[in-house]
Length: 187
Image (cartoon, rainbow, N blue to C red; front, side, top):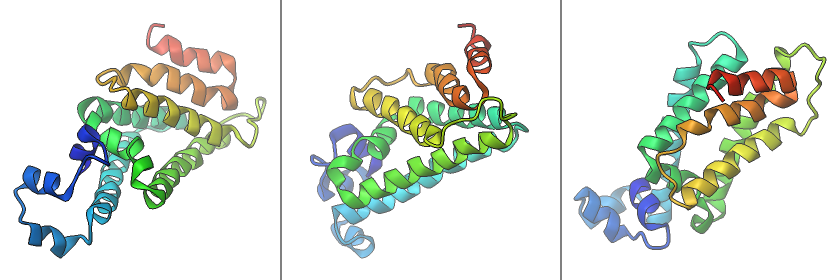
């Protein structure tokens, strides 16, 4: 479902599309799902579990917030490079899927914002981030990914890591530390 939606769009994907791609019989589909939307929402949940497990798994081996964020973002961006159709389904095609899908996407962005705000625990307080910082950074990352996925600019996500690290580090640690993130990549 996610691959089909990411490739063809939510509106153009039908139950028949899913049946043709999976080899399922119509009755088998309806034994598990009430309709296309139900299938999409369940696939969305599974897709987000996969992405979050991947990012958390990559991050948990790092000791610092910045290290965990860098590893998690790298895992996410690598996933989008490998599976852009699934990324499109998770970030772009939620709009035509409706309010339940958007609520799931919004909850995922809120979880990212909550994680970003853990930086306060490691910052020395000399650069107090405004309360809106985690929401703004998460929304900015989402917006860039959404725009590139919607434009089918596939295969270029991993190179966004230094810039994403810059904007995530800036409100908590200041411009020198944020610039250091760009230098890690040779920029």
